[in-house]
Amino acid sequence: MNKITNNKNISGLNPELLKDLLSSYSQESNIIKWDMGASSSRDLSVQVQQGKAKQLKGSQRNSMTLRVWNNNKVGITSTSDLTNKGIRKAMKVAIQASDFGNEKEAPEFSSLAKSPLGKISSYISNDHRVDELLNILKKAEKELIDSHHSIDSVPYNGLSESFMERLYINSEGANRYMKLSQSSIYLYAKAEEKNKKPRSAGSVRIDKNLDKLDIDSCINETSKKLVSHLNYTQIETNKYLICFSPESFLQLITAFSSMFNARSIIDGVSLMNEDSIGTQIAINSLNISDEGLHPKNVGAFSFDGEGTPTQNVELIKSGILTNLLHSEATARKFGVKPTGHAGLGAKVSVSPDWLVVSKSKDNLDVNEDLCIKTTNKQYILIDELSAIHSGVKASQGSFSLPFDGWIVNDGKRTSIEAATIAGDILKVLNSIVKIENDPIVTHQGISPHVWVENISITGEA
Image 1 (cartoon, rainbow, N blue to C red):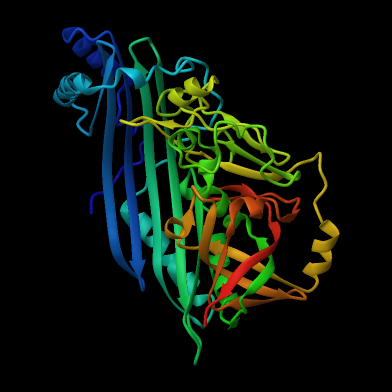
Image 2 (cartoon, rainbow, N blue to C red; image 1 turned 180 degrees about the vertical axis):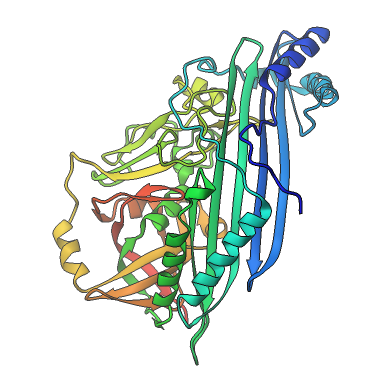
């Protein structure tokens, strides 16, 4: 087993060297305009099974996307070979690819590629040996199994430590570079009681520093959640008052993030269209923003694939769609500035960074009295949604998703054996009856509990 020494100088990218090489090769090829985005990561991960090592993985990944402008056409190529020879070959291939470029849809440099970057933590932790990660995960597995007599195994688990770098440079002098570290643990345990079906539950924790990763709370949450699922019952098919946990509501919003995606709108695969800005799409109490610069956003970079600074963007304010997420190309089409959400590739993608759901301070909850009265009786608490990729039709707004959750009667939780929640995302956003005051930080964003009425649930025998 090779040991990795503690060392914060983990750079796999050399921005100055790459810039000099590309400048030299572009001059040799009579290319005046070019840009490059590159990333590098070094990952170490372990999995265990019943106190023994199940899988040990270590990897080093490099990738580079190079664009060249040649006679009003753009050629694009990607490679994982960041040696001198690899970069020279990439320049040659990109120039050849420019012969097939579309002059009418040629990308441009981001207008903000040289603008000041927002403040963001770029903390780099000391790295750890693989045997250290293995011992930590073995201990966590044992503590979780020992926490309750019905827990017999942790079939899915993992502990990882990653070091990541990103850079963007172009021929006009843009020069972005950032590196960071990230560690994560997930524990997914199984329990079974006599004459009952096996039940399972899990949780995740992420931090910039492995030494500060809250493993104890991950163990406790998994155990508590799993034990609460041991006493289960069937649920009748009907419409119910639903309380979405922060995790499940963020899962649902993320599944329909094409609503905020300018690229998806242009491609015709979004519920929204180019005239949707300024329209009411949710209740007045709902705010949703994308906050890549939020201090709780572990793994955030200060710029996107095109070198645009990462920005916090208000997407829904008081129920009104106020902004979209943009790349350079979509921003140019909409007549606005790019928002720092682009990936660099043959077709530039757009995606959210860190969604934050909150309650508008200007509006009271709709039907709050109704919600308070009903919560003293029966409602459904949804903890986690499943089968997101197969159960969501984002362009149509519909979803049908299995979930883990509980029936709550007079404050008493009883796990639901198996059920599916179905509906329309816009109807959900307009059927919210309460947005709680306390925001909760999860590994995928921030949200309070959100209550929605008259949602269809299908019970499964």
